[in-house]
Length: 144
Image 1 (cartoon, rainbow, N blue to C red):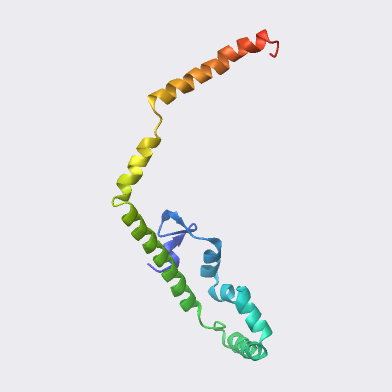
Image 2: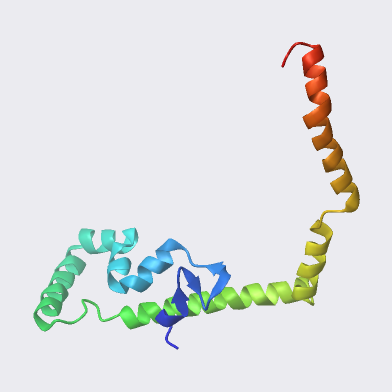
């Protein structure tokens, strides 16, 4: 599966937890245009006379030949893929060192977040007070 096929709905390899930032999605859609739109690159091309002339020559040649301007879309995509794979590997390595069993750790944290019986009782008593007792108090105070 190609790198671009691995990106679907703003995520990489179908992992919802691995949302890709907008700049990266823009770069995969039009690599050369994205690269040329980076402020430092754009300023360099526009401000240095020798680079500007060479760039204009490249632009004319690319337009006439129907080729990419810099011929580097593949390089940009390979770099982006390496960036994503590296970030994912660092995340996996960190999680495995911090938590030897990330799945077990996640499940135990979810278990701790479950509502206890005491919390359900408190919730029901609060609802009962709000629905019944607060109305009685409000009527006595002529609020309702």
